Image 1 (cartoon, rainbow, N blue to C red):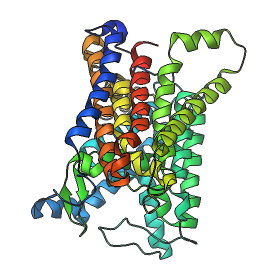
Image 2 (image 1 turned 30 degrees about the vertical axis):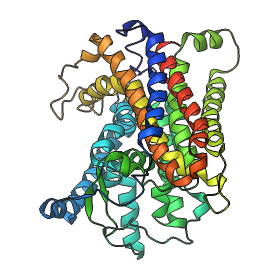
Image 3 (image 1 turned 180 degrees about the vertical axis):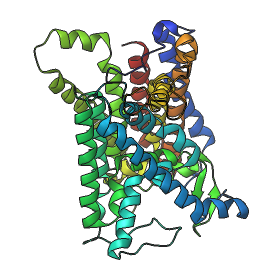
Image 4 (image 1 turned 180 degrees about the horizontal axis):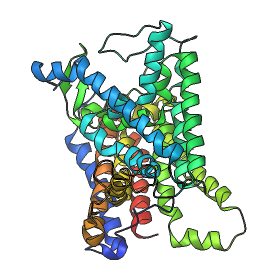
Length: 449
């Protein structure tokens, strides 16, 4: 990450057990979980619309009501308007809250908020709000309040495009955050967000607001993570509470979904590796431009994640009348989401907690003039995680192992609907090996590299 990073705290020396035992134990836990699933989980449970608890009508009326929707949209617009102040007039250094808002609150903070409330960013997305207001201005129509809120553009959104635009947007953001030497240069960050807004505007003009739900990197990211929350809707459009894994199975398997999860998982792995002593020594011993090296390495890791997952998903026999082999990766890609969440928690927890607090301090002085607009400028930052590295290291191991175990459960349940009974065990082995590899590499990069 950039030089504002704080996620490296809590390493191998801080584990209550040796790092090699933690790595071996994590991979063993994944293998044992798979064996138990084969014996005890023989019928798919998550692909049917059942076991849903209706949200009580008084609560549903509030959550679905126009007042809350308008309030959240207004909050998003107000916050965007406020952030234009430090973005335009603030100092070009790390005392500017723009960097903490973008890298800590927005990027990392989306994970816990979406886990709690579902697709939280969609509810406050100021870009979506502005474009929906433009829809009204030009007379475009939307669906009802329980629909996806789509409006028609100049042409229909092509199904083959799927989430590919979001994968490119996500790559552009993680490149800005993790690779670019200008990631903490205010002018460059302003330019990035200006190009992001322009891409959303042009796509909206052509494809309508469907473009936002498929191309906005932050909304797509939040929506995927939000499928691990208990909030969803039934077939009648009513709010229901469901188990997170059942909700996860409802991710639409569109083209580009594998690319999205590969970018999210691969970029986090790159961040770990780029902070390792091995990589630092390699960089210091070469004269190749660091930005080119970083870009190449991150692309390589993302490609490795995407290719290994695709190959593992397709490495099975399928019935001629069953799901085509080429569709298996996208149908199983939802199982990577818990792994991504585990990586994000393990990798960025201390960064979010501690730099997030620092951002709260800085945001009271958006212009760098010594102001204290919100009374937070004098807050003391709580460094409990840094001061308790053993606890932090334990949380990292648990987050990664839990994410992978949930991923194996999700993949196994979906495989029960995709694979013929005679291919059920053999057909899942390649994907299991891939996930064991992700677990090993995740723990090794955090504690061994």
